[in-house]
Length: 336
Image (cartoon, rainbow, N blue to C red):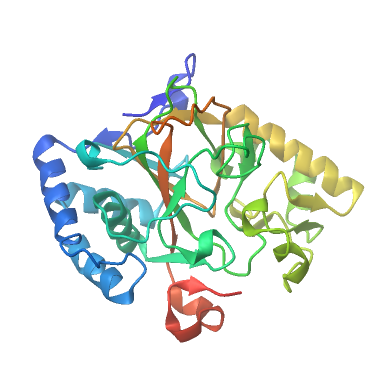
């Protein structure tokens, strides 16, 4: 199960933190293996995703109930953590260490991620990031230690995923296959529902104004920022004043006015003040409501010995139809 940072108060504990019992974990593993029975099963094929969508209905009842409740309302923290998911550790290969690593071949972990994604909505990917793979590896890469993205091992600042895009994901799912050697790597989480009360009325008002520009993150490559046609001023917060959505990445969100700069700084302090750190162990699955929660990572020290930290990630949209103009042939991949 995930561990919160030492010294955290009870109020910072994960509200939905529970683990599958052995019987349910075994049933989940058996179902996942039925999606990996043929050597040519491809995670990104529409046929395989359709099978995973059907298989979702056969997962243990409690898992389905918790995910569905989270979809209706993601709670005070905007995060759901479930332990005990199968990752097939006995046959797990060495942690990938090449840039852009993804999972094209069906595996137990990829099946688990895709089934849960189908329970929340539909899996989603972006052609410019990780070659448009639906299941992506989050692993340290030699020579990219200071890279501000999933291949690095320095601290990763708070962000929502792909806030620059007209169709950012609604959820981000991570499954831990391996923890880092020293158990130092932590996923940092901060939700607007806890941070909002710490903001002054003036800062709240400014964060709702279109006085910020968010550009693509480094993981999208150097050419994406200049070719992105939708890089126009946006607010950081939108929607209901009492329960807003967030689009923000500390690295690539630029304020356009002095008051916007002050408000963004205040928002960052509020996130720091309310943040929690999760140190994941194999089989921990984290669902982040990307609309109301920012996340980041602490620093850690990879060894590049085949046993480094390994998470897998999938994006989810609750409404695949709304991005149809960005998805050629009605695929799950946004081409622009």
